[in-house]
Amino acid sequence: MVETTTGLLTQSSHGTSRTVDELMRQELRARQAAARLLGLNAASADLERVALLPNTSTGLFHAALGLPRGEVLVPGQEFPSNLYPWRRAAALGRVQPVPLAADRLGRITPDLVRSALTRETVAVSVSAVDYRTGFRADLGGIREVIGADRLLVVDAIQGMGATELPWTAADLLVTGGQKWLRAGWSTGFLYASAAALERLQPVLTGWTGVADAGVFDGREHPPAQGAQRFSVTNANPVAAGGLARALELVERVGMRRIAAHIAQRTDELVDTVRSTGGTVLSPTAEHERAGIVSFALPKTDPALVGAALERHGVTATVRADRIRLCAHASTTLATVDLVHSALRSLQRG
Image (cartoon, rainbow, N blue to C red):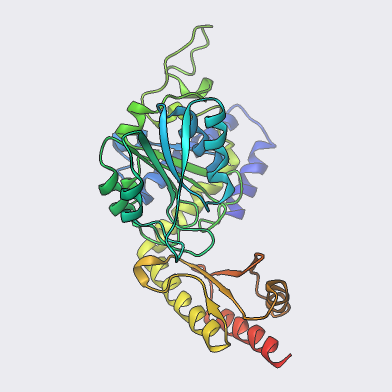
């Protein structure tokens, strides 16, 4: 990915009559790779369901501002990017977010969603994987309980590239590329179902999101037929090329192989935390987890744990009440051993 973006930056700095066209082809390349990752036929009309995004938040604002008026179920403990779009839309009188309470283990289950539905519910918004615990939502189950009359909005960033899920159970799927896909910031994509394209008003459509975008006649053009209607302006071709390269790498290695490797390393991290007296805060059942291992060491400040991990060459996310580790496809057993050494050093101290 670094080599690709560096090459595209170099290319853009030596403009020729062919440079713009060559750079702009990166958007199509990225869309095709994203479609294939979702299990779609990138050589068919399925490609029109996919559009590039600069980040997850942009996609969530498309959903929040474009939904028909009504209530939207939103988990109360979501990452802030999943909260502000709904609050801003509520302030404009478009939708009303309704907090969806998790169970005592922090899970959003199909049964909880079913019990919270009302006749006013027009959509349910969830994360495919919870950023705090790594809990993997049952997207298929949630899709089934909300029915065809409501839209399912899914933030996929904590799971895309780490685990296999029925992504197209979502009506609007949004993801950034800077996490598991390791494509860098200002990268991402969305998938829109036929229902989403029918019901979501393209409020943020820009000049690149309309029919005949290349015709500059001063008239207002209708929104594009597919997901491209959610485009505001041209995507960054350098970022698009990096995203395409990252997605193609996932495709070449194989999502099943990547998920299996991450699952194995996750098992080892869970065992390591427990063997050193830690409390695992993530689900441990295979069907309920992705690649996140959240934990705490009793009577030990998470900041001290994070510092010990850093001294041993391990990068972790430190929160006020927990430490979060994520095993990637490139994470080795030697890295797990470093985690074990770091946690043991706190015991000895």
